Amino acid sequence: MEQRTQRPSLYDPRTLGRLGLLFTPAFSAYFEMKNWETLGETEKAQVQRRWLLWSVALLVANVVTYVADLSWAFGVLQVVWIVQILWWYFKPHAHHRAYIKVRLKDAFVRRSVLMPGLVTTAVLLVMVAAMAKKEYAAALKQIEDAGLTAKPFPLP
Image (cartoon, rainbow, N blue to C red; front, side):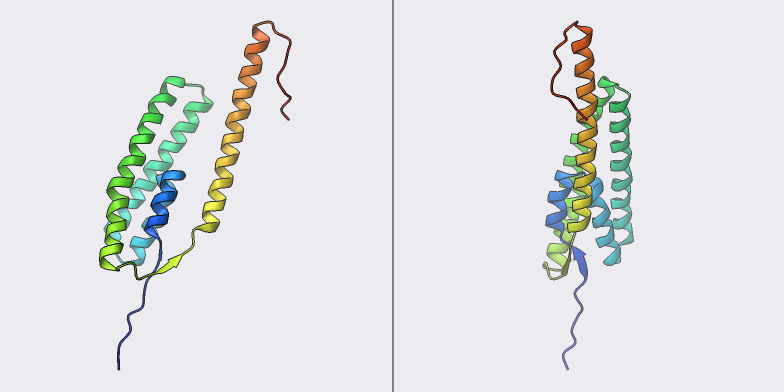
C-alpha cells in the first residue's frame, strides 16, 4: 500500500511578498512566522517574529512623529522604513520563499489571506483619511494666518 504524505497548509509566500511590499513587512512577517511554525522551524519563526515586532515598532514611531509634527524625525523614519522593506523582502522573505519552493516544490495547501488583507486595507484607509484631515486643517490654518478669507471645500 502506498503511503501518502499530507501536504502542509501554508500561506503562499509569493502572495505574502507582494502584500508585504504593499502593506508592511509586519503583515507578511506574521503569516510567514505562522508558516515556519507549521513546518516546525521554530528558529526561523523567531526571526519572523522579530521582524514583526520591529515593523510594528517602526510603524508606531512613524505615527507618533507624524502626530507630534516632528517632520525631521518623520523624514528619517521614512528612509529607515524603505530600507526595512527592501531588507525584509530580499533577506528573510526571499529565504522563506526559496525554502518552500525547494523543500516543498510548491506542493502545499494554500491558505487565504483575503480577510486579513481586507482588514489591513481598511485600517490603512482610516489612517490615510486621518492624515489627510490633519493636513487639511493645517492648510486651512495657513490660509487664515495669511489673512485670506477664501476657504477650500468643507470637510466634515
